[in-house]
Length: 220
Image (cartoon, rainbow, N blue to C red; front, side, top):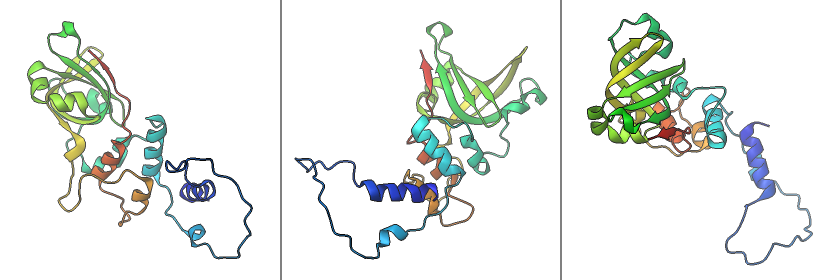
């Protein structure tokens, strides 16, 4: 059995978890077996793909050890996006565009209004410095969004590499298509019913992942 078929069979066997209208415990009564064709047991489901597995892991664990979310939205990201593992080949003070999952935010009281974001893409960690004026302009994205796109200046200081942000944006609107609603139902069955072989729109995948976003550590 596939994962979807197994979940379906378990649901048929166990029934509803609870019934708020029930005032007494349900009693078990013997029932004669009827030789009937039960259509509910003959459903066929699409196979669980890598997107499904990642979404399921994030719902249960809030992280995945096998896949990174950005692997599934690469085609919707800007063509000039810089990966973390390529910083060494980029010159000092170059303007770069990076995208990733927010891991931690820090805004110490002693930092004169500067905010520090640790994010990661599919190749490694990225340190972002947000200056006070950029923070005030993009405050909601900096404070709330789990998936962000940053455009800024690359600053190298010895072994440390930072991106000093010019702009911090949500990945929510990246790659959105006019013929598709941005929000999609956050269920595994939704992905299995995707009409095209290429899979669902990246924005729908991120919308579903937002229902169980990665844990972000915030300080200050």
